[in-house]
Length: 74
Image (cartoon, rainbow, N blue to C red; front, top):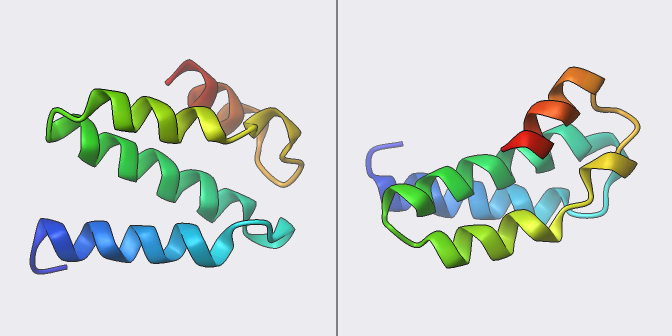
């Protein structure tokens, strides 16, 4: 993506379109984590914390255990 804003909007679109779809759990989790990393870079720690707390990664069956643990530790 050419700009940070464009990348953020694309990740938001991926997050919104993959929400609730079992076969896109991994993509949803990755988009959430990338969005939070971008928000942290901008100093918006509270907003990033609110977003990351929305996801219940433990219930996702299609994500490997290693990826779940990495996400939980983040």
